[in-house]
Length: 382
Image 1 (tube, one colour):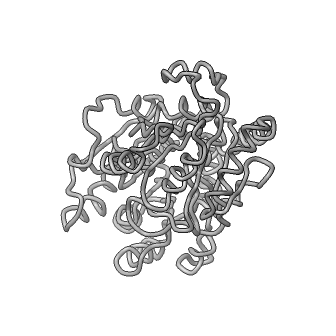
Image 2: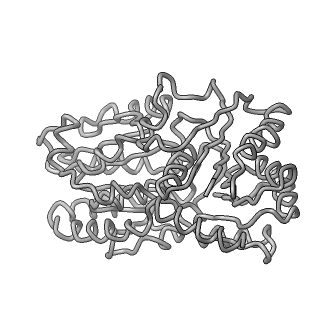
């Protein structure tokens, strides 16, 4: 099958949507399909000094990447997304297009009449985005709309007619991570970590508001014998977090880590923490706490380490308290300190959660996700 993936993602960058685009393209290709990833090129927003795009994201170079220089906003940006990117996708004569941009979806379906699988990770805002969605759906060429949680599917039903399938497919993780035999000792050795601290607690990801960084630092003050490692974040957020942690010698703010090397930090941990607040900010703005499907969650699960997570209703679609994690109140640092203390004293409890989480993660690989979507689209097109 020939598949084009069209997204409004900056590659290479530190964004979750760029990771999603690269790994879904790789997953389709791993199934034997001919895949082209078509993107705008926002040069000013790219990660500098990256020559090997596939290597940066840790995926095989078995799909083609086409990037068209484009302004990030304004009429020319709309032209690039709405017509030029769809034209490049159409030139490959795809059997279907997997699309992560409403503007591109409009062009793919209205101008080029291509069967398009639209993926959305949040409801469309009022105004132009919603009009683009309505126009694309009216074309009759949107074969399905993919959303990442049941909670988001409920919100989207008011925007998507019953005649268009809403397909729930959570985010995912590399199968190689689930199957990896990297030991904790080798992971720590590779990262240059010593055995000075009794327990290493790891957080990976962005440092935006709502990610629970203040809670992490408060827990660190109460647990001086634990080492807290925060890996990720943009430069400005990294520096501000380092200032907040300046008086804590058991906190290491690592800074940005390329996607391909995140797994070593996860395997080096004794405990992984996901302390989302009741409101979660994202790079594009808005609050996603009601319908998010964090990439981090599946990466944590694949690492097979004890996981402490905020108890948000949407996360219970995947996580089960006392089964594959411990769910805790987002705004009660004392509960997190108590849970970390318990895991130090009774590590076998957390390891049981970790092994179950790793087993559960096998259902959420990029390859499995791509396979299910290909099968569904094939049925819908027929």
